[in-house]
Image 1 (cartoon, rainbow, N blue to C red):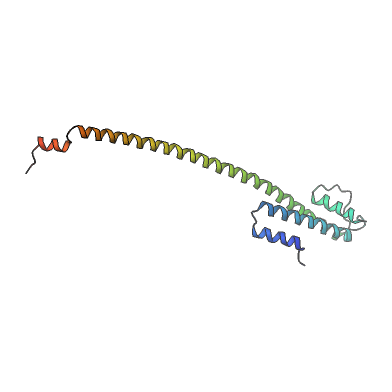
Image 2 (tube, rainbow, N blue to C red):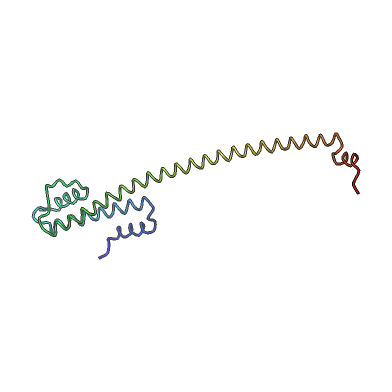
Length: 169
């Protein structure tokens, strides 16, 4: 038995991009709705005399899947209890997935904030370094200009050294 077409489409989308919060949410909702409908039909048909109509079966399945469980209707056959157990397991999975999705959203937001903060800190550090390098380059240029001005006004040291100390043969 194949899954209904909309459910298959959601499963395919999820398999293509499992990290997508949207795809995971849609798949989770689709599976939950499918379980509620299928569980309601099965409970209505095989759950016993507690479910005289489909509405009562849907009510029981919704109570079970939301883990509320008022206890006003319960299956009185073995197969009905089995179906209720499957619905309960899906409900636990649904709750787990929803909790994980919410948690991952918070974690992603915190990581994004931390990454943006790190990038901003790095930009500020780079700007400070650039300003310092520019300042040092300007000071070096000033020193070079002064040295050039000084060397132009007096003879170079090499020429004065050669005049004072005769070359050694």
